[in-house]
Length: 506
Image (cartoon, rainbow, N blue to C red; front, top):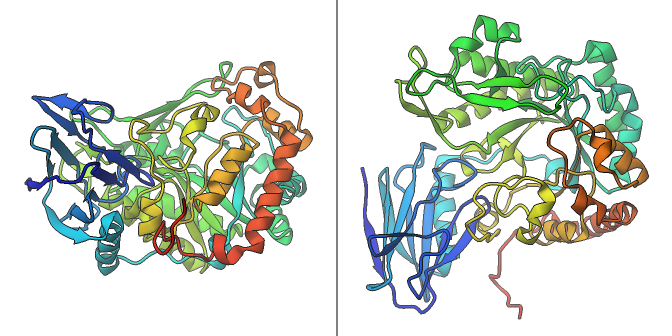
């Protein structure tokens, strides 16, 4: 079903506010020229943002400001099911049409886009409740993400070396640690087999390492992939996983291949259909184990960076061709959150990416969406996050959900000063990553890495950008900045983001 609403524009520079990632702002072209993200179509300009819920569309609404008023469109039912808007602009008549592939409602509000955000939040609160956040996550300065064991079996950071890991965090002012690759298979290997590495002492040794980090004043979360199961390598896949795969209309399993090292084999993963009870149980199992090991939380990778998909399998908990990775994804995260808190009452769920359908279970986000990075520094990432054609306006989600705890994800061991400042000024948290063995040395000694240091690694970090930075100065600056943020924690961590309401700044 489609609903059509229109607005005849009067203001000189009307703008659309779209919740893509943290948000974007798109002015309507006064000259009628089709520039990105607009496309020309039969004399009009058309924009089709990505489908909600996913990294490309984080809340199911659109706002259009026109002088002092705001036209607002929202999903008629907030049920976390897929929805896609289509926006059409006629430069001659200056008319805007908004349609969707599901029923929507429209209102005219006063107060600009802030009124639209408040309107949506009130509707959301009538349907859902935010995940409980502990004081530790509300006041998080940021985290150091460490891959302990890589896909090829190389142990980068053994369980017995967590004292040094704590030092790397403390000297940077970071108060959380994310332990990836903590399993016997390593990172991106043998999912969903999540069992501590027996060669390093198994559960007892990992639990002891987590306890050491706690005694240094740090919080710890572990890692699981929320959607991938490796094909043919685990008892889970052989027994039930192969029948819980997401299939396309031809019955072909859909998934991803991760091949990190040129001298080691690739690993092939199928997407799990998130509606399946056996996948829920696999994700509950790793959540309970993480809580038993003493971790403070568990990050489910990729679930916030994936748009809805159709699954054409028969015998699943849905009709063939139904959308999955929408309401069923939210149900999965609510389910595992309850399971973990049966073991540890203050256990937290995190995810990579961001959209509001997960906020009833997810307490913090590992940022990898539009707005969680400075647009002018995108080359530093080494890979481009999605939806770059939409100009970022990283205030929409934060104004709607000021409780947001989300990092600026940087997949290297250092943070440039401009990026650290961006995180602090936009209300985001800091994040650094140690993914490969040279990263650990760089973090410890400040020695600039060479391309040869990364050997057979297929996707090398952005070395040119990394080497422009003074690693020692970067460490000192991040520590000074996080000290400042703690000193004024009432503003940086306890303050409510209000955008420019209540003050002006020239």
